[in-house]
Amino acid sequence: MDNSEPQTEPQAEPQNTSNVTPATTAIVVANVIVFVVMVIFAGPTVVNSPSSQVILAFGADRGTLAMTGEYWRLITNVFVHIGILHLFMNMWIFAVMGPNVERIYGPVKYILAYLMAGLGGSLLSIYFKPFATSAGASGAVFGVFGLWFGFLLANRKRLKENFVKSNMQSAAVFFVIVLVQGHMRAGTDNEAHIGGVLIGILCGFLIATSFPGEPKWSTRDTIGFALVALLLGGGFKLTQDHTLAAIQADKPVVPAFSGAVLVGPIKDLKAGNANQSLLKLNKLVELYPNSLQIRYLRANAYMALNEPRKAVSDLDVTLKAKPDFPLSLELKAKALNDLKMYKEALQTANTLISVSPNDAESFLVRSSIYDRLDDTAKTLDDANAAVRLGPNRAATYNNRGYAYINLGLIDDAMKDFSTAIKIEPKFTGSRIGMALCHFMQFDYISCDKECSKILTDTGWKDRVAPQMVILSSICRRQLHQEPQRLVLLDQALKEIDPTNSQYAIIEFLAGRLTADAAFQKMKDNDQLTEAKAYVGLDLLAQGNAVAASPMLIWVKEKGNRAFTEYDLIMAILSKLKK
Image (cartoon, rainbow, N blue to C red; front, top):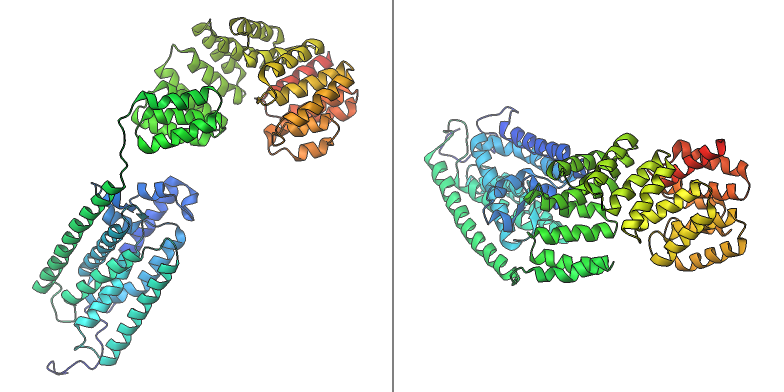
C-alpha cells in the first residue's frame, strides 16, 4: 500500500502482534498480590468489607493525608481494593481492554499513561471530596479507555472512518453508562473515573503509537508526557491548596487543654454514671484526639459498660504513644481477659510486671488471668506475691481467698476474706466470698445472713444482686423458710433487670420456669455453668438428688473452671462424698 494514501484497514495491532502483554500482566499481578497481603495481615473480613483503617494502612487515599505529606497515597491507592468484588470488576475490565491498548503503545508508554491516569483520578477525587477515603484501580482503568479514545482521535486519518466512529461511540456510551450508574450508587468515585479518562485521552492524543517501522520512543513522546506531567503538577498544586483550605474551614476552634475538662467525666465514672461519662469523653476525644488521659478515661468508661473491645482500641492508642504506661497495660490485660483472649492478656500482664515489678496490682491482674486459664499453682503464686507487695490492701487478700477456694482450702479462704473485710468493711467481693464459704460448709444460716446484708448494702440494681438472691433462696430452701424465700423471689422478679441471664434462674427458683426452659435462655457455656450449678443446688435442697445429679456432674465435667460456681459444686460434691 502506498503510504501517501489513507489506510484501508484499522491498525489495531501495532509492533507486537503476539499475545504477550507484560505491562497488563504485571499490573494485574501487583493488584492481586496487594489484596492477598491485606487478607493475610488484616484477616478474612478484608475479603468482603475491609474497614477504612485497614485500607488506609495499606495505602488507600484520603485528601487530608495525601495533601499534607503522605503524597505516595496518590499512587498506592490505585493498587488497593475494597473487597474481592471490587478487585475482580476492575481487573476484569482492565484485562479485557488493556492488552489491545498495550500493543498499540508498547509496555513502557502504556504503564506510564496508566499511572498518570491513576494520579489524575486521585487528584480530581480529592479536589471534590477531600475528607473521603478512596481506593481502587478504576481511575487508572478508565485511563486505559481514555488512552484508546485518544488513540482513535489522534489517528482517525490513518484508520477506517467506520472503525473510528463505531469505537468512539461505543467507548463514549460505555463511559456515560458507568457515570450514570456511579451517580446512582453510593460510594462510587465518579470523580476518579472522570480524572482518569481525561488524562488517558490526553496521553493518547499527545504520544505516538508504536506501529510497525516506527520508533518505540520519539521526541513527541517526551514532549507529550512532559505536558501531561506539567498539567498534573498544576492539578496537584490546585488540589493541595483547595484541600488545605477545606481542612482549615472544617477545623473547630479547639480551646487549650486543661485538666479541668476531665473533672466531669471522672465524677460521673466514680458515681457509676458510665454512659454519661462516655458522652462527655467522646466529645473530648474529638477535640483532643492525641490526649492519652482522655483515651485512658474513655477506656475505663467502656470497661464499666462491659465493652472491653472498645476499651482495648483506646488503650492501644495510649500504648502506641507510651508503651510502658502501667495503667494502660493493667486495664488492657483486664479487658483482654474479659474478651477471653488469654494469651494476649498474659503477654500484656507480663509486660506490666516487667514495668512495675513491685506493684501488687500487677500480680493481681496476672493472677486473675491464670485463674481463667485454670492454672491453680500460678494463680496462687501470683496471689501470694500480691499479698507480699500489698499487705495492707483488701484486694490482695480477696484475690488469694478465691485462689484458696479454687484449691478447696475453704478455711484458708475464709481467713483471707475476713482480713480483707477488716481492712475494708464493705469490700463486696470478699463478703460474697465469705457467703460462698459458708455455703460450702453447709452453714446456710450464716450464708443467708451475709447475702441479705450484701443485698441491703448494694441495692437491687447492683450487678451482684441476682447472685445474692439465688444463694439466699437456696439457703432458705435448705432451712425450710419457704414464706421468706418466696417473698425474696417475688421482690427480685420486680426489681432485677429481666435481660440479666441470672433472671431466668430466679424464675426457675420461683416456679415460673422449668429447668429446661431456664437452660434454653442461656447464651453460652459461662451462663450455662451458672444455671446448671444453681438449679442443681436447688434440686438438692428440695431433696431431689436424682434430678440434681446430672446438673452437678455437667458442671464438674463441662462447666467453666474459672467460675466460682464450678468451685462451689466441686466443694459440695467433695462434702457429699464424705
